[in-house]
Length: 627
Image (cartoon, rainbow, N blue to C red; front, side, top):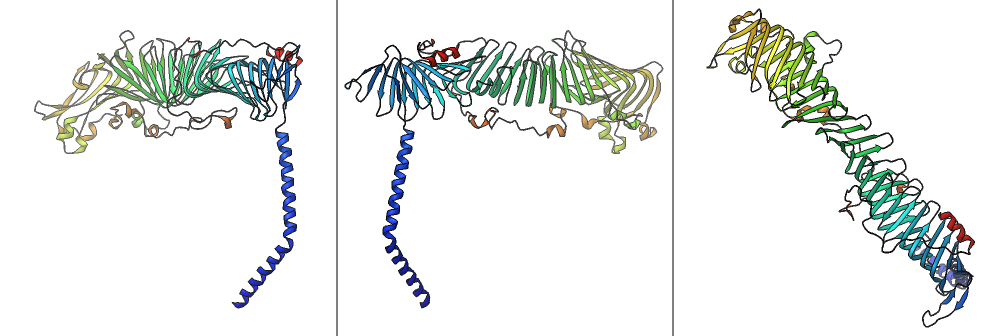
């Protein structure tokens, strides 16, 4: 312990002696370093604060009372000219503060940076230290592709950005853009517009609360309430993109497209004017404004020239039947045809629902011109014959089930009411007998009323099925009960025609015609296996009671794709510079007024073109490039 203490004392003593011996040497080294740093800083400062150079001073004057410390230069035969690190400035009169490295330029001011950036105004305040120029009155900023007019513009040469805050107009080869506020990023040829943004083009008009616009690609990125109005289309969105050259674009937030006689909604919408095509993804709704029809789903394609719409992913078509609605669902729905000639096709597991009528089939075809709705079957290969009815089209009128190879529902095209029903081949009607389910304890005896034959014809009255005829090889099994609900027997017969009268969507009575053969059998005389016709298949568990029953478990568990751009940048030209999402109310709500070609706020002064100095060669080139 003592030894360690001794060693520590000895180390500290030697260290102190070393510092005393080398103190003067260390002090001198520190002094040299400080001097070098000061010299280096001074050089950098001198380089950074390069003075503004007088190229042509013209007439010289001083006015210490009005402009203390300033030199006053005014034009003689030529304009006054200054130069500073890559820029040239001409004017009629200049107040030059050499100590502050600043110029206040007045009268026909021309400011040029390199060969591309040129600016005219009546006044410029330029700071050579900060490299910031503030131009006022009839400001015109140009490069090789665009012209900006405004009343006041700040130009930061460090960041190569220019911005205005009191209305500006930008013109390029294709468009005229106006806004209250704007910022121009010169290195990437991008404008960032805010407040009452408007693009005017002979073929379309765009209004937006906020927009990024690239003058080289003519791409516009819209944020906040925005509208694009073309000759035969109109798009609204709160976040979207538009190619102003090709007239195509998309919206990814609260988007709507008015496309001829259809209105399209969706989480994401795309359209292309040249191909007359539009598509929608997630939570889509297509409204037919002519026929009062609606299509819903999670993906849609619209072909305007072909009057065609295709919808998939929980697809649903809704059409109006007087005071009721018809709902059609299938894996894929397609609507084609012009006004009054619409055709609706549903492919793969098609279903429909109406208040007192519903059905299922493999595919469905509805023709508005003829008023015919066809339910079409597709029986898989290898299916046993006794299972065919599981795949045949099925109709439910209340709790009454009707099946057949093909089912046609005919509507009156003038009154738009249901007119008649036709079932081709293997027509089969089944209705569960409610009393037998209560009276018979043996579940095997809980029976079904059945009528079958080759064809079925039905008639509707006020959209309700009233009379049904079973024609050719008609057969019947019917449970009979007296007024006291006591079992009478089972009516089983064969004939040429059976007519069935419906009341409140149930079989009220039946009448047999042509070569009637059969009898009424007591319960004990008709075995259980004789109480069902060949081909019997009850599908009561598939009956749909509400429109929601149209959808399968797979439909209800569909996983929607994530829409890119809703919560992340959509600016594919330069995603790192895309603005943040606008929250709360937009700074200026866009009123969707077609034909309103005037900006909401006019500039305080006319933006007439500023004149260029006549005798400066560089200025003559600038004038040529602006034409």
